Amino acid sequence: MSNTVMGLDKVGVERVVNRLNDLLSSYQIFYQNLRGYHWNIIGKDFFELHLKFEEFYNNAQIKIDEIAERVLTLEATPLHSFNQYTKHAKISAHENVTDGSEAVNQIKIQLEQLVIQQRETLEIAEDNKDIATSDLMTQYISEQEKTIWMLKSFLS
Image (cartoon, rainbow, N blue to C red; front, side, top):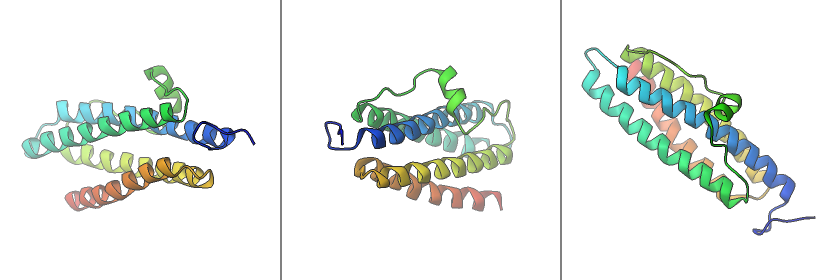
């Protein structure tokens, strides 16, 4: 069996990297959607949502960097163009949203998609004994499940 520097199977690492790059792509589209919501939101919840959307895109930006650095740690190349992102993302661009409830609902839907992708990545990482990737995905899922609950409460 051929191993990477960290003692992980190369075929397994390739599967993990592919999932991480798909996740990275989804996060990049999610991030840009969040920027759009932040810039274009209007209405009675403007002040609250404008700040919350900024918090969300700052959080997404951190995750984007962590995912890309994990790909690099696994001795691979992270995707790094919007052409690649649109081909690999499971989230679509969402444009010209000004309504707060619509934006919050879209964020909830997109976070649910990210959780699904992270669970898939977690499963593959665990199958390949990639504890660091597994830990990263577990942290993201735990945080986002709570955020989804809060978004649902806001929309109720």
